[in-house]
Amino acid sequence: MAAQKERRLADSGEVPPGYVFEQFRVERGCLGYVVADEKSRRAAIVDPELEMVEPMLDFVFEQGLKPFYIVDTHTHADHFSGARELKAKTVAKIVMHEEAPSSAVDIKVEDGDRLWLGEDLPLKFLHTPGHAKDLISVLLPGRILTADALLIDSCGRTDLPNGNATRQYHTLYYVMGSLPDELLVYPGHDYEGRSYSVLGDEKETNPKMNFSSEDEFVRYMEEENPGTLTPVYQLADALKANMA
Ligand SMILES: [Fe+2]
Image (tube, rainbow, N blue to C red; front, side, top):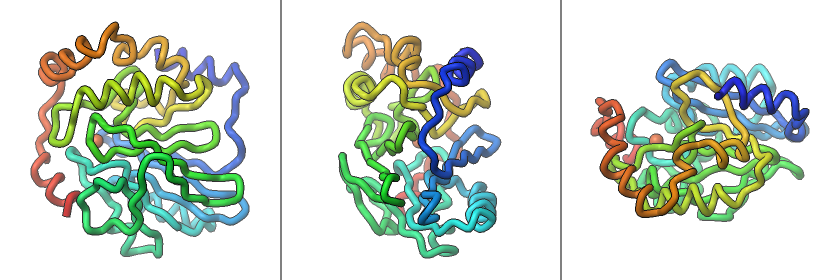
């Protein structure tokens, strides 16, 4: 299905407006991003997993970018954030949702807030809780970085600390459901090596976006889904480090 989605995108000739956009991937399937304005060279680094810090910095310096913001989309429970390390090596400020507990946050945002990298390049933050209560998706021209709120053909689990299946339903069916179909979806994880999909296709074929009622969705996420997932080995350590 992923190949089909990617092919359709290529055929459609849709290319988001020009700005620097680079995806980073580590072995476990975590995805991070660097977004920058072509003219001002101001950059935002989104969801730097610890192992991405060096490759991201190499990219930033090779491209002559100026890191302004480090966006952690939520308090990650399953891997270590590289935000603090990046902050120590750059002058960028850490951006998170206002409910994030970390003391390293410089700029707290709420639903609808924007930060600008250039005249035509806003980062608009949408509060999309469910996987975590402090989860923000980042809306860019032509693209949305959905973290664990919306994955390709799936969505993030809601059974970890700060997860909530009812909020997740609202996020998928009302927030994501009302965004334009042509947006390209760039998730925070993909375990099958895919890079992106198209929101209209997710609305049509993503099983998590096609439950017939809120009750059924919540029951599935709370009772059946956890049994299908692998245990999170670093949970306590990762949460403690990322919340500090
Ligand atoms: Fe997560």
